[in-house]
Image 1 (cartoon, one colour):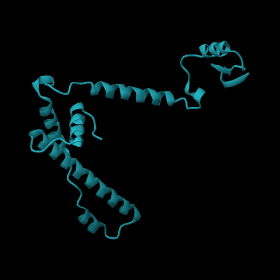
Image 2 (cartoon, rainbow, N blue to C red):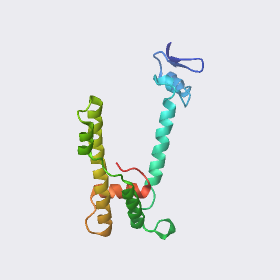
Image 3 (cartoon, rainbow, N blue to C red):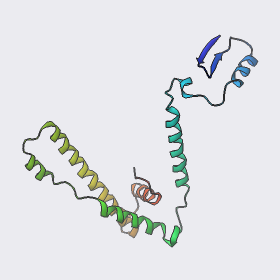
Image 4 (tube, one colour):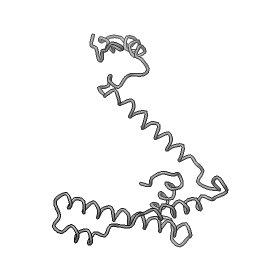
Amino acid sequence: PFHFYQSKDCDIIIPQAGHRDVYVRAIESLPLVQSPEVFGLHANADISYYTNATKAIWADLIDLQPRTGAASGGVSREELIAGVSRDVATKIPEPFDLPLLKKEIGVPSPTQVVLLQELERWNKVLQVMSASLKDLQRALTGEIGFSSTLEELAVSLFNGKLPH
């Protein structure tokens, strides 16, 4: 017989060619839960699987929350989102003054070039965050319409998740 997987705890044998009942008995004799090693994976693959499954369950539970009506404490969904967005907006740091930094550095080393590029990207992230939160505030007050991006941002802030 061919041993598909063999260890001190488990021996999975592929049956010889035969009748259907032989295969059914072989399948029914397999344990319901297999270790990751049976499939050629590292033993820690279980940890990763269960971590991802737990995150997915929590995300689904959060998504099941009602999207209308008043939240706890009599605060409406829109008021909660507005409060969170204002709070986040106040915590956004000032962008780096790149021209001043470039002047102070002078001729940059390769590492400093990479640092300056990353600071430029960071400034863009801050700009997008700030603009998105301002647009969300305006949409909540009815000044502009809700785009799909702003709706996703509002849902993420309402659910206490990081926006995508």
